[in-house]
Image 1 (cartoon, helix red, strand yellow):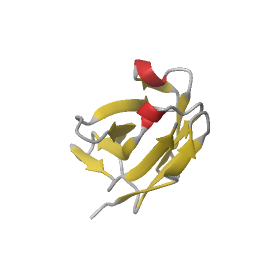
Image 2: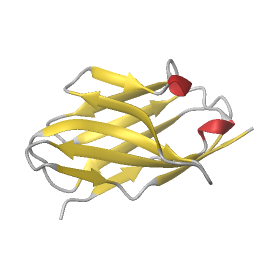
Image 3: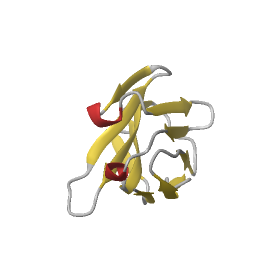
Image 4: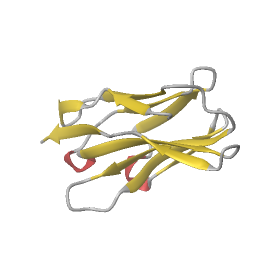
Length: 117
């Protein structure tokens, strides 16, 4: 059973930075997309950033220019560098991977990010 394990969440002041990392417990063949989603309390889960291949990236309007997603295909890892954090970035961040070869999506357990104003 593949597990995605996130790390790097925590408490930070507004304007600060955090880097989230996600690693798969085993190699996932045929990865089509890796992404980060987040869910604020009482809100629906939303896509924050996604990456296809090595450089085809997509960002939510609210994080453009502040967040950067990157991946290491050899290691099956995906990172999210978050700069200039705002209180509205607070939430649980989830790692997501979709394998076209397996026709399966995987979710991490989530990591809490709290930005104090």
